[in-house]
Structure formats: structure tokens, C-alpha cells
Length: 422
Image 1 (cartoon, one colour):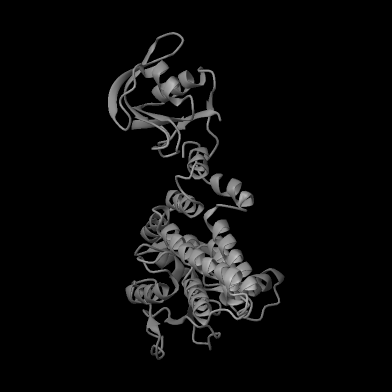
Image 2: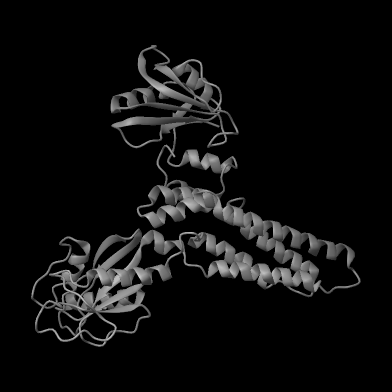
């Protein structure tokens, strides 16, 4: 196993930079640069010197960790040095000069933590999400996953599965005169399958990560682009009095009280002989169909959508008629109604996103939980041998979920999301 090193903190300059070394040669490398290392899980100030020339590089805080009680499960050393570019480059160059050390690949520290059993695959996915989190809701969801929330739940499910499997195996060995499966065992299988299905019905993490798609739609020249610019707080869409100005959709990512949104302006819906505009109109129709929330501007009959808000735009104009029932009067010029509208959007968003105290599944995790649910739900209730095989299938699904087996195809993609020092 190679010994690896990398800068783990942000790109310099900074007040402090953290350089990590992990692997069988980590302590030896630390001693060559910092002299005598402190006691395990302790910190001490040391002079960092080049191992060949003895040149003083920096004075830094040095921490030592012994396997398996480290983040990677290996011997490791951390140098918390001054964060100037020259200092960081000098320390990294000194480490590179030591035989047996190499720069870490992206995500290699976390991958070693996974391979050494310090974390499971769900926790690794949570760490990747935590690094990429841009809103408060994303941060909380990722933190719950990275701290082992789903892993603990899976462990509880596995314990129940093992108990059920043991009972099924006992029936095979000792109940030869009675081929029927104990009804209590069947009920336990059904109960676990039902619990898994309840988890599958929860809102998924993808909407929280990618943002809810809020589509602004309506006929031409009803103020959609002005409305989008008012919500975004900047000029993102071209605004003219000429109908059909917006030919293609424009996307603006926003955070509404910590909730990520992708606000999308679309081409005005009408019959058009202009080929380019017609393409934009067709795309607008598809975006409306796939939207999480639709904000409909204009007096025409809106399309059918389960989460549609009628917006009475240009409410500041004297010629505008009364606000339709259930609609919200909004003016992009004066700001009238924008607060009320965003509050309505926020209320709808909460029905689509996982609650802050709930663990949200991603697509991969949900797929394996569904495999386990199907295995339990299709278990043959009359033959203990077939039931036992189904229970083994459910356990295998959980093994793939946590990364114990059959996940080589996802590991490179996952750990490639990390930086070199994570």
C-alpha cells in the first residue's frame, strides 16, 4: 500500500493550511520532516525541515494518528502550517522527495477510509454531498448521511433480516414434517417489506441537491422575463415590448430560505410560424410538464398541473383587471406581491422536499432498498427453502447498499467527486 499525501485545506493563500499524510510510511515521513512526533491523537509545535538539505520550511502544528484510530484507518500525520503558497509548495515538495510517498488521487483518503471499514458507502456519499452543499437544507441532509444516519438504520434492518433468516433456516433443518412456513415469520417479513416501502415513499435527495424546478410560463408579453428578473434581483432575461422575445428557456439558480430552486423563464405559449420560436415554445411545453411548480402569468386558461400558482402580473398598471380567484397580484416594477408569492412557493416546496429531521435517499440507495423490499414481498410463504433464499437476496441488496459487496462500478465515480486531499 502506497503512502499518500495532499493539501487537504483550501487553496492558498490562507491563514492555515492542512497537509495530510496517510499510509504505512506516514510516521516515518513525519519524523523525517518534523523530528520526534507527538503522542497519538496529540498536537505539538515542530519545526518542519527538508529531509535532504535540512532547510527550515516552517514552524507548524503536527498531529499523529495511529492505525486503526484515524480517519483513514491507517497511520497518518497532519501538518497544520502557515497558509502561504510558498510554504505549502515547499512542504509538499519535501514530502515528494521522500521515497515511497506520492500525491493522493482525488478522494483517495476517503476511499481508504471506506476500504478500511471506517465508513460505509452511504457515509462516503454523505461526505461528497456535504462538500458540494450550497444551501442550508443541503448541508443538513448531507450531514445526517455522513454521520451514519442511514448506516444505523440499515444495521437495524440487517439485524432483523438475520433473525428472520435464522428462523427460516431452523425451519428447514427441524420442521421436515411440516412444509408450511410459520405465519409469524411471514408477518415479520411483510412488516419489514412495508417499512422499506414507506422509506421509498419519502421525498428523495435529488430535488434537494439539484433544486426544485420552478417554471415561469404563460403567453407572450405578459411580463415573464421582467418577473424572473425581479425575483432574481438582477437582469438575467432580455425584456422588450416585442412579443416572443424569449426564444429559449433561461435558468436562474436561487436559494429560498435555504431551499434550492431552479427558476426557469420560458418562451411565450402561442401559435407561431417562426421556426426558432416554435422550437422554444415546444421546449416550454415540455418544461411545464416536468416542472415541480409552475408560475402561470396571463389571463388565459393555464395548463393542468398539480402545483400551479396563478400570477396576476403587471399589477401596477391601471388598466389591469381584478386578480383572479386564488391568484396573486404581482408587479415586477414596484415589487408588489413578490413576498407573498415566494412564501407560497416555499409552502409548496416543503411538500416536495425531505424534512430536515429525515434521512433522504438518493437514487442508488433507493434502488437497493427497493430490491430488498421486492425480495421480501415476493417471498414464497409456503416453502421455507424459497423463503430463506429470498431473505438472502434482501441481505445481498443491503450489502450493495452499504458497499460491502458488488459496488466496484460506483466507487470510481463517487470518490472522483472529492478533491485530492479528501
